[in-house]
Length: 161
Image (cartoon, rainbow, N blue to C red):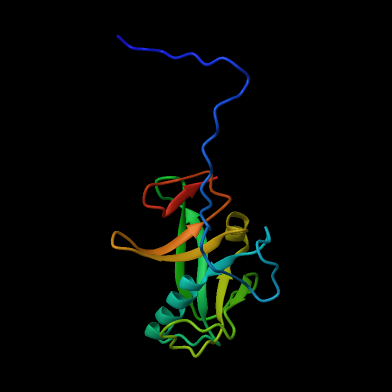
């Protein structure tokens, strides 16, 4: 036999607290951008370190090339993130410059800034996003913390709005 408890009174039960996905992260704003601006992209120190290491490994100069971040159709949720190195920005790209003078552990660049390139179409979906790099026992890779994402798949590489 199941027991049911009825509550009387006007106090509703407390709502579960929303967990802040950015709690404890050190965010870096691009040059000329206001921190936490809705029309900006930010990265974490972990992402800055990993971008620098990967660029050095690929032989890409921070003065010339950068990381291209974008979206494309596909994936189990409708849109998927794309990330790759590019030798230069395209004509209509938004270019974000991060980390000038910010040292990271084992920094092969000597605290040089890195560039992120975002095409106009992708920026519609990525504005306000934070790019992080996560390294745990279970997972290693870039993590897109995107306020424009209504739902995402289990692996985190695709989303829908």
